Image 1 (cartoon, rainbow, N blue to C red):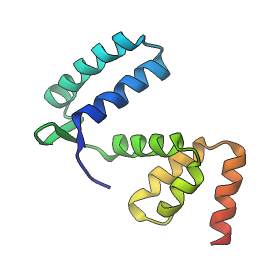
Image 2 (image 1 turned 135 degrees about the vertical axis):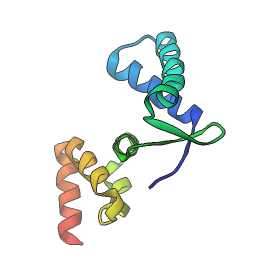
Image 3 (image 1 turned 120 degrees about the vertical axis):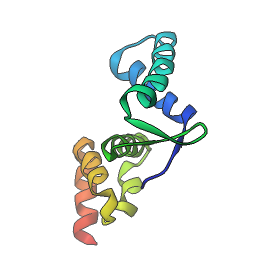
Length: 116
């Protein structure tokens, strides 16, 4: 699960988070995302540049959070997470996803695990 993401993708994730979760207007979200994309690697080490314009997370928690967020955004998050349920590197992502599922989807996920 360790891979480098293009800077544009990380920036879009930050913009989406600021806009959707923190209530930033789109232009402000973009400005703050641009600032963060400079600050995070240069001053904090949260992300590190693996190659030009491609970054990875220093700590897996961030990568796992974004992976879970992408799965939860899928039309059918249960189907999206199923291939990874027993993968040892995806344990935390599976936990994050299952904790955020709608109760109906939680029941489907549990049923798919029990039936497996």
